Image (tube, rainbow, N blue to C red; front, side, top):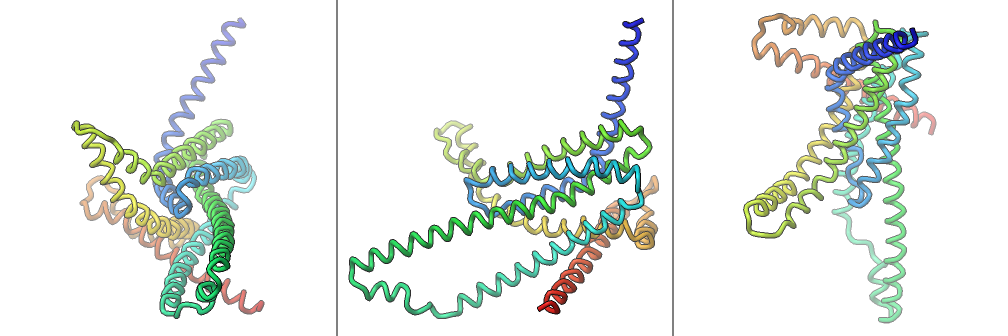
Amino acid sequence: MAGAGLLMLLDDITTILDDVAAMTKLAGRKTAGVLGDDIALNAEQVSGVAAKRELPVVWAVAKGSFLNKLILVPLALLISAVLPAAVTPLLMVGGLFLCYEGAEKIIHSFSRKAHKANRAHKPAAEGGHEAVADAEPQEAAQARQEMAAVTADLDAATLRTNEQVKIKGAIRTDFILSAEIVAITLGTVANAPFGTRALVVAVVAVLLTILVYGLVATVVKLDDVGAYLLRRKGQHTTARLARATGRGVLAFAPYLMRGLSIAGTAAMFLVGGGLLVHGIAPLEGWVHHAFHHAAGEHVSILEAVSSYLGPASISAATGIVAGFIVYGVLVALRRLRG
């Protein structure tokens, strides 16, 4: 009897694991769109740090992402069981925040460009180096060394501060993207038993975190890969091919990072706007009705493309409008407070 009971238990466990595997695969397909946005956003967020600090920064953000999911998975399971109606409004709040961050990023980018242009037109500050040059040679050398030491300390402190700001910003953005991934996964397994739901959500959350930050680490170290290939010596075909590949990677890497920077900002509006559209029933209904033709069995290539680009364009436009409205409201409130 004990042996038969053990076999029945193993059979039940195998069945549950098969269900979890099948549902995890389905949930993974449904979250693939968010995955691309997640990679672009995080690669853009951690770009710009010192080369030797890139992997530590990615690791710090990855740890923050695991912590986010450690909070979100139990919380989402609890809310979906106790108050499922609260899931959509909470996601909409997160969507608004993403849209606001996208608008803030664009405005700050233009502000930085204007600031640099103004500085370029300003005459060089008088004093400083000129005063040092007028001093005695020995005193001038000492003064330059002291100024260099102070500048180095300030630069190091600024880099550390900027690094922490980037890490916190990336973890904050990851929280919202993770919430969407968890919500999509929960929606996929909504009719499954609670245990299966919990396992599927946990597995998807862990696997996607590993995949996203593994790819992010690869992207940010792409220039190092190119430099390594370029150092290959020898005249045989493999070495020449490696050097050629290294040159190609080094030439392509700056454009890739620039593209990811643009894609990351666009993803904020796309994901945030998508969450808003999903939460506004009339708007979501109109979008579905406007592009439902692509759901048929026989569709043209144009209809198939419009079935993706149409809703994506509406989401992006909604995100841009909402982001700049929220940014404007917050700026006005800050000014009213003085």
